[in-house]
Image (cartoon, rainbow, N blue to C red; front, side):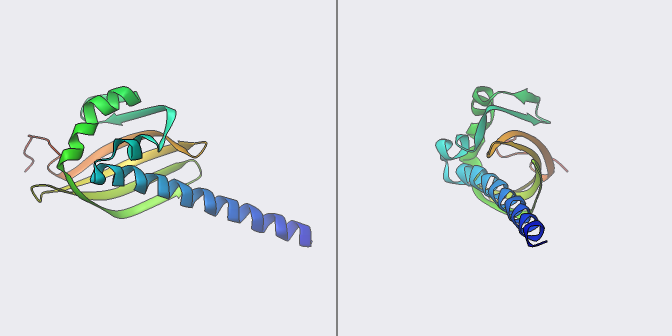
Length: 139
């Protein structure tokens, strides 16, 4: 009985640790945008990382992601998280970006994880300016 209880406790600790690590990956990834540190961002990603967004990005590679998306970091002033939920190898984050011109951009991202890295991100834009650097006005 003690062995079963110990096994359950260890399993629970492993699951909790995995979720905390995934949350840290998400926070570090977005902090890299705030700090304008590409290496901080890229080090969170798996080798076969892909990114998808409503801006015409459909499972693009890391190289294409850097080319198309990294430039928006110049508009990031601050990232504030509303909610991060991780379950197994998947997670969601809802966060606000304060841009350098003090506009608020709200995003939700769906993450998949593999071997302690972010394997994919699907980004969904919410109310606000769409995404940092967007010239589109939303009303």
